[in-house]
Amino acid sequence: MQSFTAPAIIRGKLITENLVRFGGRDGASSFESPDPASLIDRLPLKDPGALLDLYGLSFDEIVDYLVELGSWLDLAKNEFLQESLDHSYDMSDQTPPLLHRQYAQMGGLFTAPLLREAIEASIGIKYLEGWNPRDMADGRTARVRAFGCRALHIVAGNSPFVSAITIIRNALTRSDAIIKAPSNDPLTSLAIARTMAKIAPDHPLTRHLSVAYWKGGDEAFEQPLYQPSNIEKIIAWGGFASVKHVTRYVQPGLELVTLDPKRSATVIGREAFESDDTLRDVALRAATDIGALNQLGCVAARVIFVESGTDDAGIVRLARLGELIYSALQNLPESISTRAKSFDPELRANIQALKTNRDFYTVIGGKTDEGAVIVSHTDEPVDFYPSLACRVANLVPIDDYSETVKWMNAYTQTIGVYPEALRLKLRDLLPLYGAQRLITLGYANTGSYALPQDAIEPTRRMVKWIVDESCEPERLRPLWAEPVGLPAMPQRRRG
Image (tube, rainbow, N blue to C red):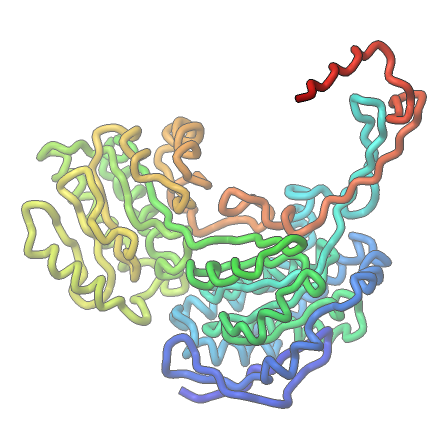
């Protein structure tokens, strides 16, 4: 593996001096970036009034800028994306075919219909464009507007799309962003920012984006930066540890918005067994939800509850479905799923141990780290189900879909469901137990950045909701007016 340089970019200006070396998350690769201590005074937007230049832009002009930016994010032509992809092959947990597909599709996130939908669905364009009056029940008139803010984004490195979506949301909300690049993807957000600086160096949207790397948990750097005088919101993606240490900086005036680590699951109804063709279709859909991005995303299926029945005949049916899922998993296009780049050794040992316990489990595959399907013979997942990864799923037999609720909690994100009629039954039940997204089986790894995520609306949380009120004495009795008809105050007792 070769070392490389990941410069910083601050409001359109590239920073390449004062380089220090950082180790990659894999423990083998490394890169050089500007010493964070040399950036601490330059990263924050000290004067919030500097955001006013963004309010000289209409929403249409912001969309036009982003559409133009998207046209420049063509992997075949963009040298910054090419460099980022080249080094990501070593740094990322993803394999080259998966990374190449995402970089090649990145520009497609920047289309006008998607950009407009992202705001209309979550905030409402009119709330970003001006004051919106409401006549209130008590007689006052309130006007509401959504304002951008100074934000720090701690992005996840499991997909380059996270960096692109963060930059889109920042621009659409007229905000100022400092992006902390992750150690397993230090270049994607930087590549987009460098493209912005190349095509429009003096544009307000370019000047309100900064990207830098520092090691998470560096209190000497973070303590002075993570202050309400510098930033108003922290939007943090990632694992439990990376989110947890940020909480120490939360205080009045500094809000934390977290997109926490999640787990996802699947519920398959008894209708899957109506015919062999149906079962094969269900198997392909389930394999796609398991295997896409090599199960690295929170949306990936891991435990699959199936209404096969828990008797001996039900376990036979379930094993047949497991064989078909395993076969479909191995035959997914390599741009969607491949053998894992690095297989978890503890998971491998757990799989091998189950192979000796044939009374309770059937293990399909898992011979050469190609992935596996574990078929439980009882109605409970394997003990190590939270660590299922590397294209390993656990099929669990159930007699009725209602039994799934005991396995749902606040960590449960996406539930792929078959058939559609079952999804309609589950959508009013599973959210009560923690599930946050239900979707047609086979589509778990697709999504829109306009929709809620992790049971919140991230874009809506990124803005400040400001109220301007006017009150007229003729419509709303003022406090200074003498109250009419109020009973006398009781006498206070003494002694």
